[in-house]
Image 1 (cartoon, rainbow, N blue to C red):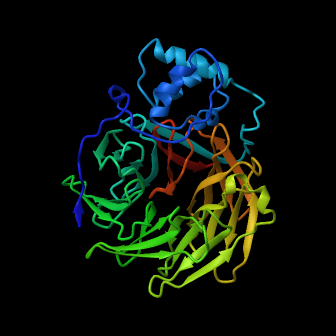
Image 2: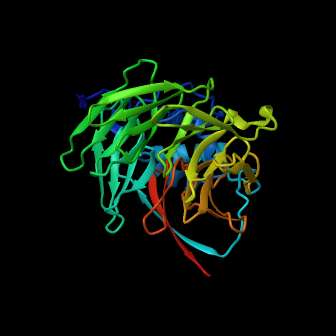
Image 3: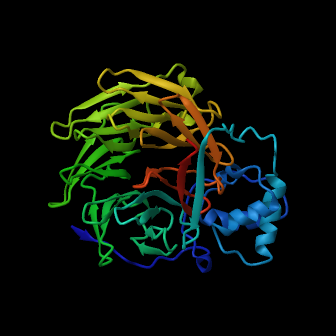
Length: 417
């Protein structure tokens, strides 16, 4: 077992506290301020993400920028002016969500996390009522006390880039070190961090973790096309390549009988893994026109109903679906905003399905009632950040986040009925 390494690294634009992201960049439109955007924004993310925040006024761009980075004047004004001119507000944008009215009322609460530019994600609630998140770009784990608004952050190895988190029964927070090929554990009481490196160099990108009832940690490795199991008591890690080539295992859940369920982002299927035999059963989801898939995305995430049936999002086709694991029957419903709406995160609370339409601007939160097969949806207040995962809370609320706006949030639900 390796303890975490805490070392300093030299970063560009270090005075702004920005991490390094070395990726290919798209060419931005000509205009005064272009060079400033290329210098400031690419320290954290690729320029390809800038057009993803379409439809914003000068004031809205400034608000969004303030959630990412603390820029001095006149730099902030110059960048906001360039962005508003290059990517102006468009009331007729195809990316406006198709919002559906209904009887359910929701209240959004959002908190800006302390470290800007960290792109928080995959929040969860622990039994003590605390909300935790993974700060992927900041290589940190954060905690929010929703009662007081107090937030605390724990720094990890700068190369860890945690993708997702889960908690064990003792209150430790486990994370997937997507950047350095590790699984890690944070003891919040002591601040001690323990890292478990992957035993195979081909296992490069631990992705999403979950615990089984016996305390084993199972996790996906998307681009490595693997699933793994870590035994915390011994540190032993076992890995298995998925039977479908380029399946890209993504979301993962454990049902009440202990079966492991995995979403395939790279293929139209959901897999069940027997944790004892490691036998894999794959359930093919509809794929009427492979060429029509937007970005080659299929099933990103899934969630379990009280009867252990599976709800999933088909991101490429803009559908949500239901799999009955007993009969193998699959039913699907198109998302209100259409085939390019890109459903992403999903949670089932009291057998009601919640998910987001991540392509829309603003990002839309959608409710689907299986009993009536009716949809309802709301624009998320800070909705340009993309909810990448969501979870139910003990009181029936949802815990969400917005990566680009560096917020974590709670959606409280109340019905008129």
